[in-house]
Image (cartoon, rainbow, N blue to C red; front, side):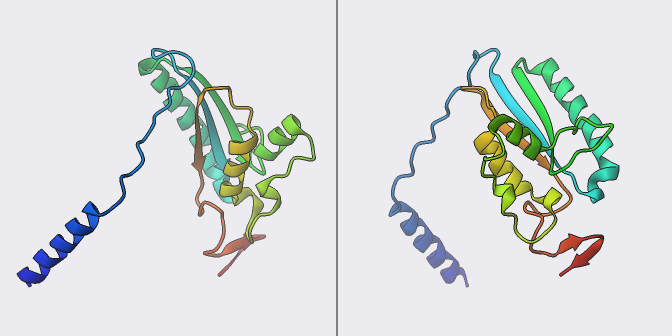
Length: 169
């Protein structure tokens, strides 16, 4: 058994030494300054009914976390809250991502959300993230982040899907 273990290690090490050199990772600085970087953050929530009870709590927690982070990290921070194909009154999630992007680019913008897989539209996080990545009005040279919150898979599909309260597998 010990010989097999050593053989595996030798083979692994020899295969690693024959690999091509990896590309160097380049970290590009954000706009702003070293002391006050420019950051654009989108907080995106699955706007399906199953998230309704949690939306207010999540809204308050996200707002509190961002406020707390501002105390220890000085940034030129721009935070935008969106729901995927919907909104939640009484929260910070008062704009849906589709409406925002159509408002910026007009009704002719081709969105990934227009071709969702089987499933429920407000749970199509992957499509909304793709659309926001491409079409959101990011500030030039800002560091960019999208924080997605859901109780489903990233694309709200494939394990099963919800249709009017019935779950299919």
